[in-house]
Length: 320
Image 1: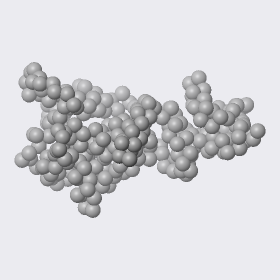
Image 2: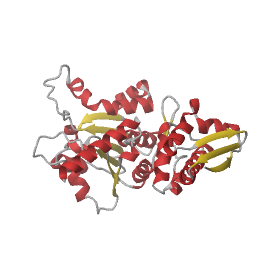
Image 3: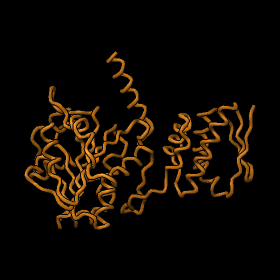
Image 4: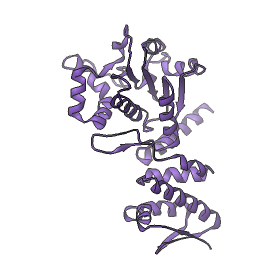
């Protein structure tokens, strides 16, 4: 039995580290089969030598996040453990402290993984950013947060959110109501993100003023979008012609963010995805950057990561 002792400076650090009902420490204990006991200002970790070493690295990483003012969650803890298991614990110091904007309820929006941090940096540094990855990696939410931050800083005058009106494997037929009512169901994820950032009343005020526009992709043709932050969501469901049309809307002092998941294409059989084409065609253009997310960047329920990996493994077996 090997034992290592860590010193904790303040009791507040220990409380944050252990979490509600010790849930954070239990995750570490179950992952590495170690015992973690707190006695005053000392934290004793005991178990197999290699496992203790890994657990200590995770705990030290979590304490560094706490010192930066980060609130720990199951997602933080699992992500730190995955980085330590890969030997990348030195990169954990890059996390935390990068607040994009504050939501209408006063909650700070921050990148939670290294992939998300790269994505946010790419949006800041490039005119066009393409975010490709599985569901739950924050592609749309972080893009909307960056758009709201740019709007609040008066860097742009308009936020334009769009996505192709393609049904996810179902034929819903004709929907009731006027044109806005017909397209609203397809644009709901964009509304949800904006409501969270701005609040419903502020959102409605900006829509009436023309500062925010949420519209289907078909409405983009023939326009030049100056002084705007434009987000194309669910871009895997665009055709190559639609993608070219969208990209050529870019005006002066504008940014574009294109997001999509190439494993969830709902286009009819035989139709190429415009997102796949764009990633290949635009890769060498200065001012355009593509960020690829992985299952490790998923910040939803832990099961979402497991589901994505299960589908990836099943796809690889079919290919073999």
